Amino acid sequence: RPGGPSNVLRDACLVANVLDPRIKQEIIKKFIKQHLSEYLVLFQENQDVAWLDKIDRRYAWIKRQLVDYEEKYGRMFPQEWCMTERIAVEFCHVTRAELAKIMRARAKEIEVKLLLFAIQRTTNFEGLLAKRFSGCTLADGTVKKPEVPPPSTNPFLEDETGTETDEIVMEKSEMDKPKKPKVPDNPFHGIVSKCFEPHLYVYIESQDKNLGELIDRFVADFKAQGAPRPNVDEGGAVLPSCADLFVYYKKCMVQCSQLSTGEPMIALTTIFQKYLREYAWKILSGNLPKTTSSSGGLTITSLLKEKEGSEVAKFTLEELCLICSILSTAEYCLATTQQLEEKLKEKVDASLVERINLTGEMDTFSIVISNSIQLLVQDLDAACDPALTAMSKMQWQNVEHVGDQSPYVTSVILHIKQNVPIIRDNLASTRKYFTQFCIKFANSFIPKFINHLFKCKPISMVGAEQLLLDTHSLKMVLLDLPSIGSQVVRKAPASYTKIVVKGMTRAEMILKVVMAPHEPPVVFVDNYIKLLADCSTDTFQKILDMKGLKRSEQSSMLDLFRQRLPAPPSGAENAGSLSLSAPTPEQESSRIRKLEKLIKKRL
Image 1: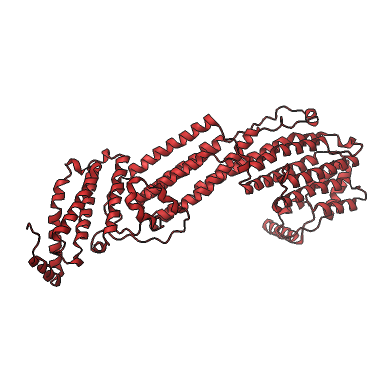
Image 2: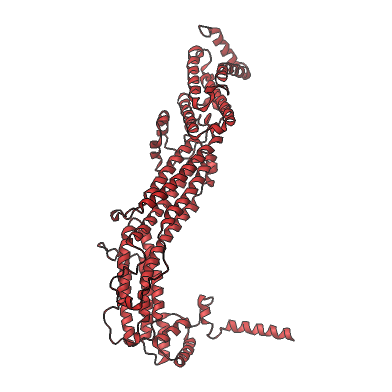
């Protein structure tokens, strides 16, 4: 009627309200169907306005209809019937079904920009519904209220509102209120936009392509520009490309979580994993300097006369800085990947949390860090090798007097002073990895030094004294290694100091044993066992070689050494080295039992 519904119809609704609930339901259903009949005609599948690029017109239509309803029928139906909300909800159900049908039919025409546009407009509309209605009619509908996730403890969520575009300004006030990973306060979330989920593979494929192009650009930029010069004040340079990568990841994650918190988030996580690995291998590992096996053809004479040690070092200053830069970048990526995993778990549905695991990618960055440290250790180690070789080739039996430290010690110290300050300054922001470098170098250099010490044979008393002086000089330099060349003197980490003291003290003990007279033999053997606590006959043999004893003297010494060895503890790991000593009662008993079995068998 032109004047709107009469009072009779309003009273009729009140009567229906107290009758069988089915009567009320039938009235509501019939009225809503009649109200939306025009919508189904206007936006038929074959109409131009039905496609995604005109999706705004659907939402504009329902807004006009709701205003029209309020004016004409607002007073007719009882308020508790929530008719305005029911019309809106039914519109959403119909729209979701219609959009799903048309997208299935025209799937090949869906491009990522068009899809994102449609989703954005739809989520905006869902946000408007949440502001206008309570969602009380959804309980008897097909869409359930989303579960409210536990409060987020992520400190970075407050930054995410800055990633919103102008298209979602209407939702911004809603998103600013709850600092939560999803939009739990919107009961209408997904009521229409759920229909886009089967087509989000278009978005995922697009991100796969974009990230592939991003990695290729990083590779090209690195080749063109090379590694950035490290800023010593900031403790080394992190490659800028890694920050660009994670900024892009965050943008994708926020965008995808607004589209869906289900399987598409898992698919996006898989894409993230793929390109984290690619970044680790192509940008980081792929640009680590390569070691060369040649030693440069240096002779012993040139090493002993060596004044400048730079020709021995394999890596240039730029290469050392590059290794430190890659190490710092890998550490940044490792920490940020861990944060990325936590945020992905917050964004995704609770049932899918277990499927998000970036441990493999974190391990990959750990491998890059380990390889970088190993390269730095190998470089310094290799630079010291010629000096150690020179030490072992010297005629130590001809040394007549003890002087200052030998040339080979000066050479080792020179290489340490060249490399370590550069590495320390460029790893200032990753102090724990500089400590790892120091520990690994000590664990590599000291055993190598002791092995070369055994090659110094024969040694005179004066030669042994000179070697002892040299060993003490190296020990002092190694103890000072973490802060060598630094204006700020820090106490070396206890874990590092312990390794140096233990290793170099052993070297000093070896030389003290060599210096001790071998007569009487019993005193010499007991002194060796006391000082070195080494039950290996091989080590004892090397000591005898260093002293220059004849084979006949060595044979009697070895016999005496085996006799004087303390009984090994049960299950000792070094039992193999004591195989020449007298058998224990248990071993003897075992042999007797075996012999008895053999005799019985033969009989």
